[in-house]
Image 1 (cartoon, helix red, strand yellow):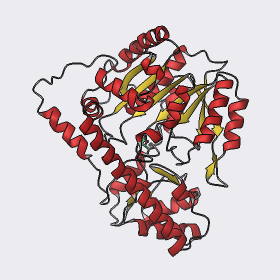
Image 2: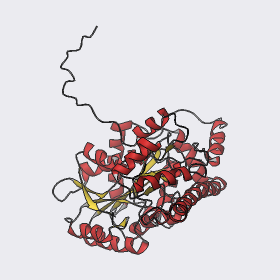
Image 3: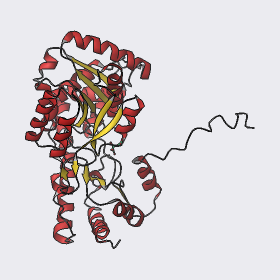
Length: 413
Ligand code: LMR
């Protein structure tokens, strides 16, 4: 019998389901044999199956047979061997900030946790110029909005994507950097922009960095695809390392979900660069306090796996090969989709962006009605903004998808 007063939760409105994960649920429930899931950004092999990286299997075996392993708490800021190797991975072996001991590194609940902890720290301690605000690219990963709002930082957008060229709105982006009040916080996707797959060139990054420095802005980097984008860890880490080498005030959110295929283990880190070692100690002490109240200590398993991979040279080499397997397959799918659309099907429009974009996602440029038709009529699951996860395509389903996309574009689906 119900004893709770009827009005107890009356004021709680019903929320819509998550725009990305609801697609996974709908895909699973669909019995159509040729269904395709291009929604969530999760790698699949050529048989549409999740892929456990061989190097991850190896590292797991090592852990399984380690007689000294226990289940004690990790330190509040995480597994030290993991956080220090993760910092070196993204900031590079030549990092002055690392050599000078100016980087606070905290293990987080994957990239989302890093974004949250970074946002929380800024909300508490950053000297905002007026209102607590963060500039997000338009568009961005949809969760960024909720993450900042949750900690009282108001998200506003800066121009990023130009629908006319299906490329970067460089003029709009740089104008927003110029026009924003000094010391504004800009969230930057360091490589393989989610959802567009459109990145600035290195020359453009240099010019962006110059404005960021001149305007004393704060760079909040989100890095979820290092190595996964180009197959080269150094190339994908270039923007972060360049900004750090120029002394930009910044932090980096890092995830190992995609590049190590460890989605469920939630392995990530937050790296905050301070101007001095003394400032780093103060920042680190407060990070610890925040982390303690939020999660006490991060989970150990995934961090141990990644720590082995990053710290054992033979495993590290093997990982680089696994990363090339994943990024290579995605690049092949981009080429094949492009070939089918342009050469075979002669689909109206220009499709060169499919091969120019980088990483897990492609912004196809199709509109909401066409995306909806693909979901409802062709059983191809994608977000309404026309983003597709390239990892969902393979040699067996790319033709079905290209034909469905062709029909959607022609309005004949
Ligand atoms: C995505 O954008 O699909 C992924 O990053 C998964 C997620 O958490 O949204």
